[in-house]
Length: 356
Ligand code: UD1
Ligand code: UDP
Figure (cartoon, rainbow, N blue to C red):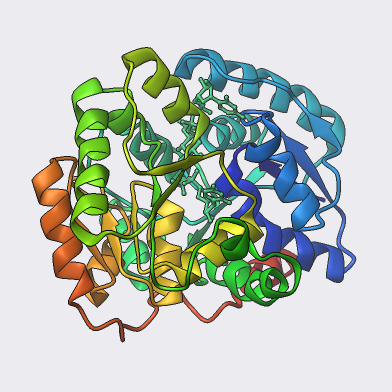
């Protein structure tokens, strides 16, 4: 029995190929949704668009401080796993859901598989970095997306026999859904945009948007870009960022601020953007896969493969540095190779689990 634990937008998207694969092979599995994300556009929309089976459980933990959220998830997961007799628990990524799920499972002596293991920003101020490191060290199967991620794990003394380089399931998700998006949605027409003639933005990192000066810097940077290039700037705003913009009394001139989008719509917007600005992990990967230049609104990244192949550049949150970085990336050839695998990560992961 495979217990798939997930709770946030990127986990649903990146776990979707694995869920489909379990279903295709007729394996015994169930989905345990922690409810860390709960707004329609942050979770339900993905179950609908990606046609995923309903979670068997939803803990409805909602938002809270790190300790509250992590603690509530652990208590809820433990109760369910004590009844369910799972052979393995699968988690994906670096959220509080991942750490809490992995920790609750391992203490019940249930094996843990960590999808997207071995990413490191080496910045312990990020809650995600703590979650990644701890989850990796308590996992039994570490599904590293790249050779580099594997090397990060080996350097920390993790047993090589536990590490499997599979590629990142986001490649599977992009390949599986790009064509479906073409058939089912036409978001450019809805937003009156022309291919390769707009910028797309996302921002939600705690260390960016919870700090007024940093959020102000990002928003100013977007206004500068809009003025300089006279192209639409489209910004589907994460709920954390919406909340902070309201609290700090910050607005935006000339930028199209919209609600978060479904994956099919967002993927289509990304694929057709001239350039994307983001502090998201998944978006750095997707732009790299789609051949779209990316400017990352952070000082470091755990997706360093994107810097190495040249699809991405770090700009931080200073407005003039953001503008300069956009200029650099607009002049760069976008002929890099995708370092995140061939889109078959789901099969490797499920085969490894089946073989144990
Ligand atoms: C979480 C993850 C982050 C991941 C992101 C994906 C942690 C520590 N953070 O950050 O790694 O990149 O998800 O998007 O696990 N909110 C809503 N509706 C929702 C969810 C959140 O309104 O469905 C608002 C609430 O005001 C909440 C805030 O967003 O307080 C932050 O939510 P939370 O889940 O704590 O963190 P994220 O910023 O979403
Ligand atoms: N995404 C989406 N709609 C949006 C913004 C992002 O579907 O409006 C998708 C995006 O394609 C990617 C994932 O959400 O697959 C990234 O999630 P997020 O940025 O919230 O988290 P992170 O990857 O930083 O953990």
